[in-house]
Amino acid sequence: MTAGEKQMDAAQMMAIHEEAIGELYKAYAKLFPDHEGFWSGLAREETEHAAWIRNLASKAEAGSARLNQKRFRTEAIKTSLDYIKSLTAEAPGQKIKLMDALSTALDIEKALIERKYFEIFEGDSEELKLTLEALTRSTKAHIERVQKAWAEQR
Image (cartoon, rainbow, N blue to C red; front, side, top):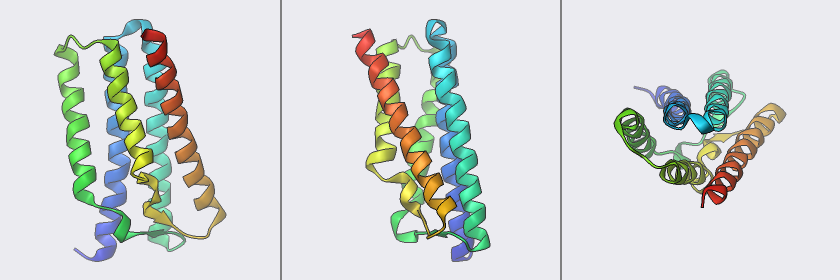
C-alpha cells in the first residue's frame, strides 16, 4: 500500500469514526426516549461531519489539500472506533443512566478537540479552512450542548 493509499484509508477511517459516534447517539436516542430529539440531532450532525471529512479526503486525493501523516495515528482512531462500536453494541441491553451516556458523549467530543483530530488536513484553500473551522465549531457546540444537558440532569 502506498503512502497516498494509507492517507486515503486514514481519512476514510476518520469519516467512519464520525458515523460511529452518530450510531452511538442513535442508540442513546432509543434508550432515552424523553431525550430522543437531543440525541438524534447530535447523530445527524455526526453524519454531516463524516460527509465533510469525505469531501476533504477527495480534495486531498485531487491535490488541493494534504493529509499530515505526522499528525495522524491510524491505531489511535481504530482504538477509539472499536470502543465506540462496543458502546453502541452494548447500549440496547444496558441499564445505562442518562448521566453516564452524557458523560461518555462529553468524553468523546472533548477528545476530538483536545487531540486536534481535524488537524490531519492541511492546505491553503479557503474551502479547506472553512470546512475545518466548521468541524471544530460544530464539535465544540456538541460539547456545550452535552455539558448543558449534563448540568440540567445533576
